[in-house]
Image (cartoon, rainbow, N blue to C red; front, side, top):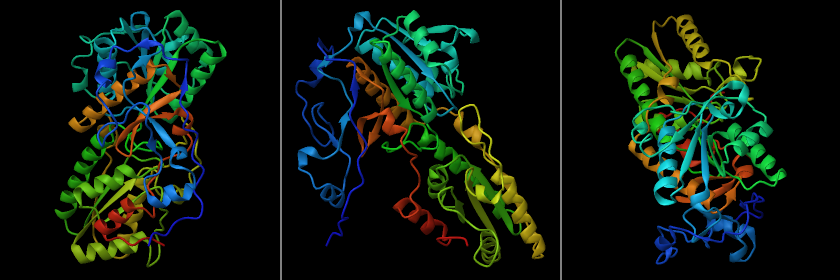
Length: 446
């Protein structure tokens, strides 16, 4: 018998804003003539349901046609912009992430080859590139100029953090005669894109603002995984392998690996599962204690005495409550974290020394090496499909939205929903349960 909840949480507003009716025949309409909704394709008039369980659907207590759902990605039969008269711009913002160049290349190719848009402009160094006082030039992007950029990490356009005046940004878009702006960035960048879209609307301009969400921490809601995440945890798992080799090569050795994850521990969880070499995984979503018989330090001591070594994986945002750190903010408004890695290294070393156990601790922090690598094949394909979806959405007049994959379907998500909360590891979910099974650590260190 299914245990049904009495009420369902209120769904977010999933309405996608448009600039107006789409009246122009799409050059891709022919592709759609023989398509219909199937297990592999969602027609533009269909919806991808927000809920995917019987309990969730039943709890809504509404007719099937009123269930909350998302608009599917893909080409439309009719579009808003005349391709021959359309000029597009691309900007990358925030921290680096594997796949940025793949997204840039995918946007340029889809705009040029499929829609015959005649000019695509690259904005240099994030939102700073729109502001005259920084003196950054723009660059013309063509299929030839982006042909080989995906082989390198980083972004060929450069990036920056921090808020810029939306009025200055829209002034620049007007001077450049841009009709479509693609923003590739994280939640801070998407909030900036929302301010740009609001300024566009206030001026009565016909400029579409479409986002391709980028976060190496995989913390954007209503999206299964952000691009670059698979590449990131794959490389992070190599660091765990190295830590395990180091730990097993010395008496009572301990490997300590700090991975990216300010508020969400997805990289730590997936990397640990990929290698199955971790004895403990620490993430921001699950507080932990160090001292006492039920604490982390005593558990590590027991594990080392039993097995001769141990490996600890910690996300950068874990254990912040232990540090007594006064958090400042960076240029993007994110709290600057205390450094949990060296703190744990010192506390572990002191604990073993006090217990009279000689040990060696090998500390590995591969963060910047991970985020700067090129995308792996999986993420490269994902980036291509996201960039295609973003172009289809923009050309059809959608705006103030992002593209992503939800329940294995590519969907449109309003920017407001994409920044409404943070996607985090559920301490009661199957991913964290899988980590506990793999490591053998207790549910809580108290």
